[in-house]
Image 1: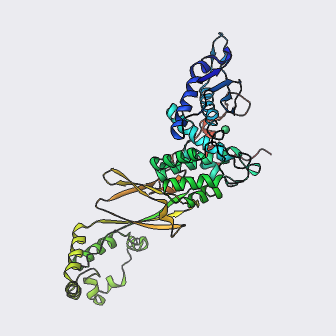
Image 2 (image 1 turned 90 degrees about the vertical axis):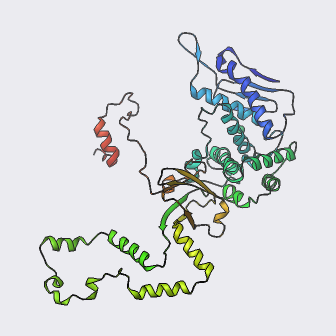
Image 3 (image 1 turned 180 degrees about the vertical axis):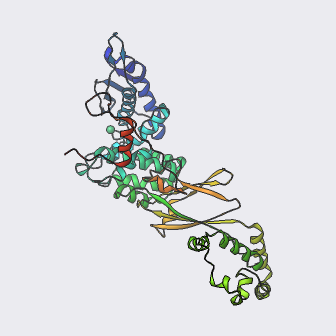
Length: 447
Ligand SMILES: [Zn+2]
């Protein structure tokens, strides 16, 4: 039985939401773990921003605020806080009160697992509320100073909330959605919950059960996310577009000439011409020779004979392979990636064709196994490609997304037209002056 206890000051914030949220949390957590084994679940109003859990009973804030006309209301952030805190504290019934763990040693084993699931439940409660639990929300912490690994004894944690709640939430979310897939992850997570309910697992029990139940080697993942302070930053540094040489001089030389003509001429030669300066060879035509009449890309019989000999030297199958490749005339792209953050992650690559059509290619994290700092990937495409984007949907907590675009994009940003001076209420600063300062940096301090 789900129950709530609150005074009339709770207002509709409590009467409309509290018990409903208790039911929702029990349903979602049960689905991912085991059926809730106790008879009651309670949410008690405390009237301040916070929450605390005990077996079968939780204490949660805030309440509605009394208005001048006697009605009670609440802000979006108060609503968001109350719903999330009730889900979270009810979630603690499962972690760590049934799947018990030592939070004074490994805080993430209860707060992290519970925050991961409260984020799942929050999305299922109302997808239109921004719960700030997406992987993109942890990137600031992941590149911050003064960090310790998640697997640090709790008293020694720095940036406690981000370390023990936020980062494990992002890690497990990415493990589920981007690395293992929902089916495998959910099966393994449920196996962990069922195997260890009413027992007292340690981190190794969690890591081992997730691997055993899924059959996936995740040592590299635990090491990166739980034992280091590395972050995710995959950069697409360079892309080469290549075309297969046909070896036929009549085709290849014409292409070389085209490429050579596409190069800009020397501006200094242009200036000489503008000055009316005639070159020696122009003034003395008797020094002109064969090379002035035929450029280096003019095919001669020497090259044609060499090509015929080359074809004659191929066996029938090699010759057919070459002819097919030449006829298909595909586009070859070599992509150079580097891993600047240190964490091995899948490469989620969006390809945009010249038609504007887009396609997603996913490469598993194992692609980094033999060259963890940088790698090259060959793409062969019938269609010409206009650009690439790594992790376009921001699912992988990539800390610097600007090096994900090839070609690089212009970064969308904002100039504040209006800055409220501290403690002065409405702004009085001149708009253009403000924009100028934003662009040029801070003004010098007055002497
Ligand atoms: Zn908690």
